[in-house]
Image (cartoon, rainbow, N blue to C red):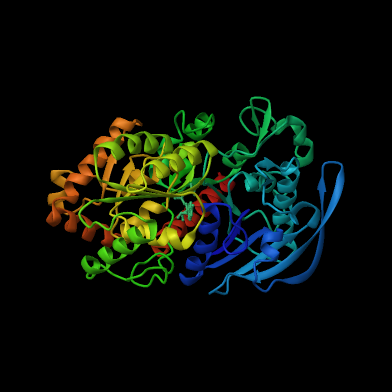
Length: 495
Ligand code: ADP
């Protein structure tokens, strides 16, 4: 199969979130499975300076943007460790900027125009590079217009008529919503600006556009695929998703086990696998406690958190539970994260007041993230919502028992510990449903009680470490989804 993946981010060219990890890793696995993926993304300043060789293709193109025409160029590179071709759409006025979508927390005012340009460029690139994709895989609102162009302006053109389209939602909270006059920039007929297609309460909504025009839609976990069909997680688009539920599915993101495996992790003071976890993990814990200035005690659980400090991640619950627990128990806490200033203040204050129990590292540090995954006993993710989540998957691999709220990808990847799941050997962590500090506190208490039962705890760790959330597995599911999408498109064309 020939697959064109259109994205606004891909590791190592440009990254602000999980989308970049997916689009950097999935194509490599698809190629390994014998398919022909091609990646296309904007040539941001970040991409051009990422250190990989990037060369001009020597192709210039012009697309209409509203009443003007804009010129762009195509650049070429490859995904590291593979032969996957990567095309970068160069248009310096739009993409040679400090950020990808914003600077100093403020969105660029021409974001709609920038991604109208990119979406049109993707369709032009197919013709100019003589690509023959069976399916275009678009991601998030930045590429929401691709399916619309395919179904309208490019419909019936020989090279395009057999192309199916898949649209992946990485987070419903970001929708690419713009004022209605930006409809003019798209060049599409006003007839599409209606509540069933591109309009959302008087605004142009590019995520909705992506959902409406794609042959298939998926998101990054089966549970999230269900949740977004209802309020509040549908973020206003639950009706659109209910309408399209027959083409909507969920696939859990894979983990890059080259980077996240305690057996080969260069950031750790001691490496370990499922056999040697009993020796390696305590060494990592002791080193982490030393590094963080916490008492080096093996007998108290060390609870780790690595997170964007945002409301979505349930940091208010974490704060409430920590405030209570620091007074009543010896449990130790390490929080690594940056984000909302209110959480910086809350966690910073707890760290200052209780230095023997709380280590607040309010920064971004990948090496420390690895050491926390290895050195903690318990990992906390009480998210309000979580499309997929990666840290719980890393935690499983590192034998760090996840305590999570049963939402989205967290619900799909962590099995709660009950007498039944323990007996069946399927328990991997602890989950709770109600979004409250009481529910989190009770669940954490269950985990800490189990921590004091070494035999059961060892079993939990062993089951966790056995889980396979590799990209190989997720890529197989994407391959099936592409096949289904192509069949669906053919069926629709001939219907
Ligand atoms: P999201 O994409 O919503 O932020 P995920 O769990 O899917 O959440 O992925 C977050 C990724 O970012 C993980 O790889 C996590 O380790 C990393 N991360 C988040 N905050 C930090 C931080 N302060 N330092 C290092 N890594 C971080």
